[in-house]
Length: 123
Image (cartoon, rainbow, N blue to C red):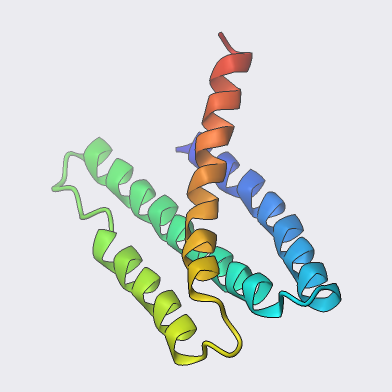
């Protein structure tokens, strides 16, 4: 489980740089809604990944103690994704809907890329 926390910490650093890039894009381009949508999506996506890490830790602990394993929290992560889309639909003047959805997936894409790089390095 320590490795999952290391992945989360590494991803948090990358996401801060992405958020800074989105802030620069929002401030210096005419695509304000796109960059704002990406930022909102990344924030909700990072929250979803944090929920996953926390639930996987509880799941691992329950299995090691021989207890009944709790759920992984898919419902809560799904509700968070719906909330992000609801924000974009409620305020389309400020947030681009497609950008919010793309932003929701960015943490998972980063996770996939990190795992591919890890396996290529350690092969």
